Length: 530
Image (cartoon, rainbow, N blue to C red; front, side, top):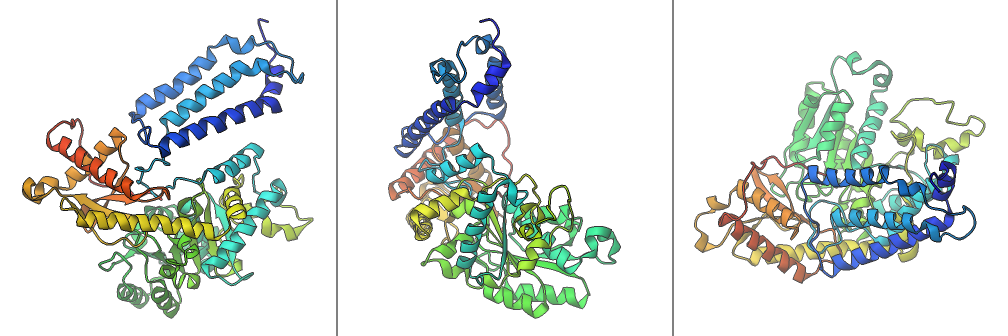
């Protein structure tokens, strides 16, 4: 057959048996991949420069485009005999294999970089179901069960955070950055409703946003996006533990009030990106109440600690905030992205956007409007992203998440103790959660500390990354570069910590011996990522 009808191929691509064969192959390949990472049979990734990776990805597209055999397979669609799908399944297998080979191995025990977890495989299967059924959530009727699942999850998580049952608002959106932006939009619309229609230029004085000194970069981005201007971001100093200073906040708010500068919101953090610091939320909430200003808490990383009996007290006062962001795709160990935004007042969840879309929202049943996500989120074709969290919770129960959190925090504490006891490492401070900051400083025989300056720490991190022997990130605290480890794999053990430290030592020796080339400078301005 020289030319297979494209109608046949379209039907074949939706064939249930073909889907089954590909699904079984994916399950087998992922199981092998997971086993290899957990048994340390491979590095956490095989590093390639971006251009080379792009060329490899394009080669697969070019090979398919030029492969006339795709039009020569003889099969009878709907016959039940799908043996002729073999070539297609092989192509699927090849594509999956290279995806797994080239991807970062987050389930590897030495992968401890960003705040991205070794996600629960079970949650991933539920997430795959979301993709397979394509349950979008602009309005309730587009994905009724996924909307119901999302609402059930929000109701239960809100109670864990300390909000009163049935008396808070909540939504799910795509990532902490978008959730923080949505919260600030709600704060603006609640206090300055004229801005939506007339713009900020109609105000004689632009409102300011008062933020934690180490606030995630998305807060500054949100202020810029909202048209307030980033120069209207006022930073509050931090204490020696990098927590927002209550006294500093009081001084800042007093000064703004004395100058009659309108305050849109105060943004506090619970689990800062830089070092995992938790602000004293009860005291900060008291100051905000005193001045009558909106308190928003970016608890994208640390909000999940409410599930841990051992660590929930770090979030005392969280329920006093006007809005709170919690990312399930961080410390609740589900795949990205599932960011939850909570409002103390239910009406505030509808405040961010003041629009009407008659082609979308059904006026014949207005009671459904509260379930229409396009009313409360930036997204219309919003992905159903809470199914993984709902699935794991349904099977293992709520306490399972507390056990996961306790395990990674305990591992981080063990890492801190090992670093502190070693004479060739310097650790910044005892971790507040699962983020540990440290630097390699050599030992007494290595001479003065200038040898291991900021530039050395950055090159050391880069060497580890490209060797595939350990994944760390970097951050700047008090003007100094530190290596940053975020323990996000609950299977990481003490022997893995020892091995990671040894990998750091070996990379440091190679750098000092000039084994690693230095073809280009390393930026000394680290970025933050949620």
